[in-house]
Image 1: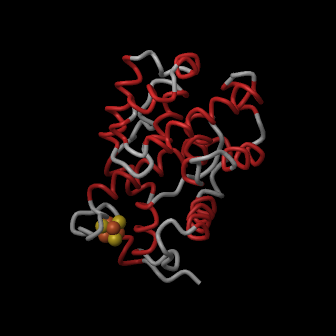
Image 2: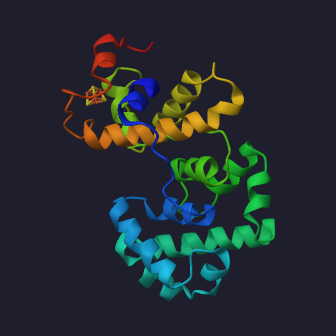
Length: 222
Ligand code: SF4
């Protein structure tokens, strides 16, 4: 799937952010909203000088809520961003480098313990902002994997369903050299979002989809 999608769409250059901290903000803000809405919020934060830890630290909670209003859920997302910052300051001296140097498993558990951080957000932060080699799964990948009969259907947002997708992705790239895996996980996630938006929507549009051949060859997963 990766190779077919890469041949069709080319490199996706994800995550769309200029800095690691901006990427982390985007991972929080994109929950349950469109990327267009996130871009408006990030633009507001940029103009307010709040796309850095120092800038965000200086913002009052009410002001932060106002700036991220376009991406919704402000009473949950603004305190969640402040909680991330508090953890960064208290446990990693405010340093994203120190945070990134923590062991993957330990860091994932810590991120998941923060308010407003589910597995998809934690894994996106680990992979895209902190450079850890972990797969990221999302609704697009779930749809594709179910339609290609690679996993059994599970309710949306089901934690076991998420873990199954992550395992499926990890297994699929397990033969690739370890140093390449973070790049492959990065590109594959971005490519599945691209095909999800273009073809694998709520009603699939398989005609012309780069994965249409693969669909014909798919067999049920035991
Ligand atoms: S071939 Fe159809 S089911 Fe498969 S990814 Fe494309 S749109 Fe989705």
